[in-house]
Length: 182
Image (cartoon, rainbow, N blue to C red; front, side, top):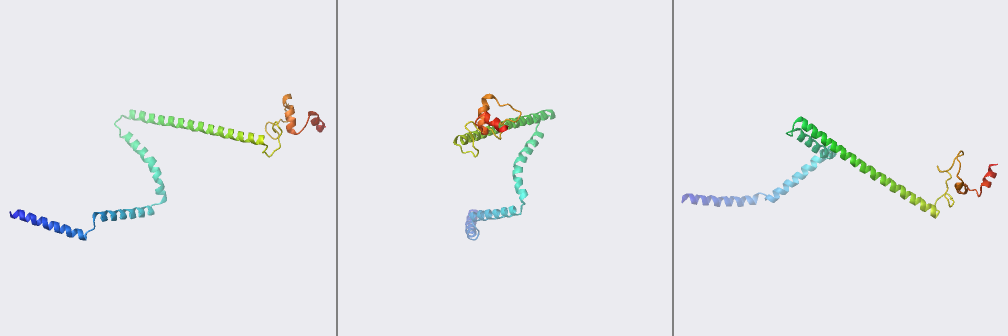
């Protein structure tokens, strides 16, 4: 019985000691809160000291580290050297094919975009011609003066285009042009 009495007395003293400690020591919530505050201040101090160059390396690490991990995994894989080389060759060929396909897709998209822009420009200029908002004075047929379509001295104008060309140049008839040349 003495032992049970001693055990009970020890329990009572432990409870009393625990109650006294609660009064003097901070709670677990307060300890966690102060630890978080300290960690936050420490992290701020480290980032202030860290150079910008190191901060920018984060993106490079994001790209390089997985590639390095894959390479190390391949090197330590339980395959023979020949099988490993063929696997690496196949992976590079797949990556090349994927890159070529993406390049072709991007090229096609670029060509489509250029065609759309060209069509939009042509529609815009057609509207300007129809509404007469262009800066140049033009005839009903369109002005070819000063454009690559304008004939040079050694070119012959087809008979069906002669009237249109004379109109574009500001002449009423062929006779008026020949009189001016004399």
